Image 1: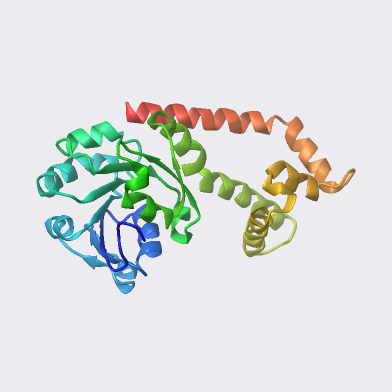
Image 2: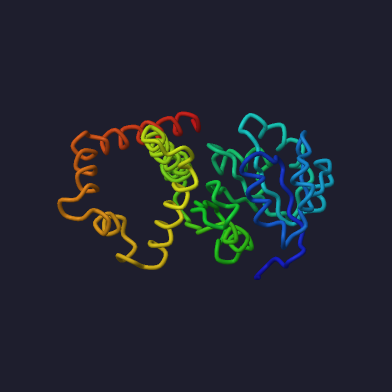
Length: 260
């Protein structure tokens, strides 16, 4: 791996949902240090060592910020005086690049990134923004272990967060609706079957069936005059697409307002 070797040390400031999922993916190949008020036993069992923030910064080559936005100023104050050549990767929602750079006394080795919870399996879309040459940085190699990386303009982050970052919730919302309907029709525990549906559909896309386009997969299932076609026609005529579009555009506006 260019720029960073297995057994290098990666630090996580904050071990919430995103932090835990990233650690699970990276821990087999790297030494992981963590700073968090709550020392998670599961994390310790996979080799994470909890340390104070000074030790973490001084001992880590890469530092992930996986904290809540209201903790950023406090953390930045603590670490800015300790930074030398460490790579900072921020997963903090809504925190703009220049705002973090300013909080860190104009420290330049910074990447802003936004993943989804799919990082635990390496199957997350990950948006990246930086002022550095991304092709020459070890950040891209680390983030690529967590998912598919895409360098975007920073003003696209609100849309990325609201579409892709929130995507697992949207897909789970539909899955939960399917589970509720299945239970209404006598299926006691439909959740495992729905998970199989998600896995199977993902496999079809990855295998190249139907040129991997969602429209083609939909047409493969919806036979002319069949039950699937009838259901999809009802969904389309109900205006559900417009509801989803309006809801996600509202989420984008909300994201922008939080970042201002």
